[in-house]
Amino acid sequence: MSGATNDNILRLDPRPSLRLGVNIDHVATIRNARGGDYPDPVKAAHIAAKAGADGITAHLREDRRHITDRDVERLGQEIDLPLNFEMAATEEMLAIALKAAPHAACIVPEKREERTTEGGLDAAGQHNHLAHFVRALKDNGSRVSLFIEPSTAQIEAALSLGAPVVELHTGAYAEACNEGNADEAASILEDLRAAAAFGTREGLEIHAGHGLTFDSVTPIAAIGEICELNIGHFLVSEAIFIGFHEAITKMRALMVAARSGSGRGA
Figure: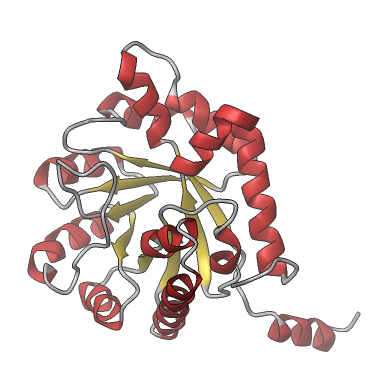
């Protein structure tokens, strides 16, 4: 096959490959509900690696409700996959991130009373506060991402801050899917598609995640500009019924099918 033909093939399918980051927070949630060492989130990370995960995501919250400092330390020591360290924009978390030097650091909003992350970071409204954290993490060698809503204003703020990556919040889309609200899900999906396209044109790497399930992942995975999905709670929940390895491999298969065009979009 000639080089010219290879070039043509590449031009016909410019979409990036789609990575799966597995969030292990809620393995730690189960452990902490009773105390002790079981189930071990680091063991879950090893299983995720064997199941084909491309990275491990862990959110060290200020109240340590699931992932602990020791978990972060062990993940850095024992896991070969890239670690995506989710963190609030606080000096305490920055100091931990600078010491751990994870492959990636994703700045997320955090409220102590919330059960899970509620919405995206207001990068536009918190620009001056966030600038220090983005700069320090980048200077320390971590790939910085901002967990934001799919809006032009938030993407422009991420660009202004110099963050190379944004993770689009898919929570509202996933909730609409779960509630059977097809019109709302379709509307939010269009916002996600537009944000991914705009961010990519402006030079950002686009990730997405929050609340995705087997039933809702396909239209998101089919968005060609998205390079990475981060999924956790559903995989841990589904592991109760089919096992963690099987849940991850099934999610991976749905993502591959969506990206190849054989899955069904919304």
